[in-house]
Image 1: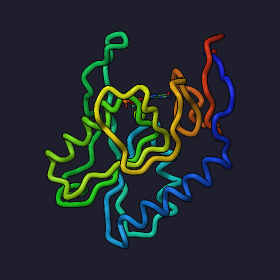
Image 2: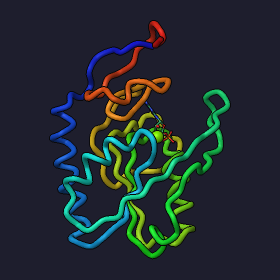
Image 3: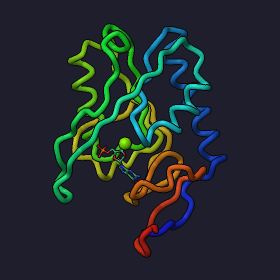
Image 4: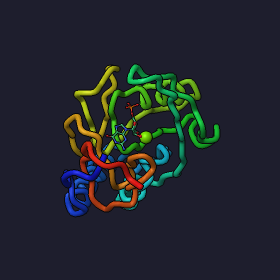
Amino acid sequence: MEIGGVLFTEADIRSRVAALAEEVDEHYAGESCTVVSVLKGGCLFTADLIRRLTMPLYLSFAAVSSYRSGTTGGNPRIEFFPTDHEIRGRRVLVVDDILDTGRTLAFLRDVLVEAGVKEFKTCVLLDKPSRRITDFQADFRGFEVPDVFVAGYGLDYAGRYRNLPDIVGMRPGISPQ
Ligand code: 5GP
Ligand code: MG
């Protein structure tokens, strides 16, 4: 795969994140919450989003890996999880880079609800609804994207490109070195 076209520029992302932050801010109306950033891809988006939020918040992280057998999907597994006091009885906002099949966020929702969160909400920068295999919907979302593999602004292709300031589509071609 190689880098194809730019889907969203740094400026596109900045203005959409600002608008999204206003929506999120309105929802919390000054009440505190725990933001759970989904590693690794969600960390750049989280960093930009939370600097525009005004309610008191705690920042935490989660990492989920899925061992996929071909394209049929695999079982998600927790690799890293917030501590009990960061989430129990609290309003929790999970922030991720992209909502694809929905498996990751549906799994995190189940685990967080089981852990006793008071409210579960999700905010994703990108939404690829054509790939959904669960009925999962994000509460807040930035952009809808077509069924292309995207990279940049936290999203990787084979571990690379997370540091690109724009979001690009990848297309079949040479592999990264
Ligand atoms: P889901 O569980 O919704 O299928 O997948 C969510 C995760 O898969 C995302 O957090 C992201 O890590 C990865 N993912 C899904 N689509 C893409 C994509 O187009 N590009 C990249 N880089 N990662 C993706
Ligand atoms: Mg991810």
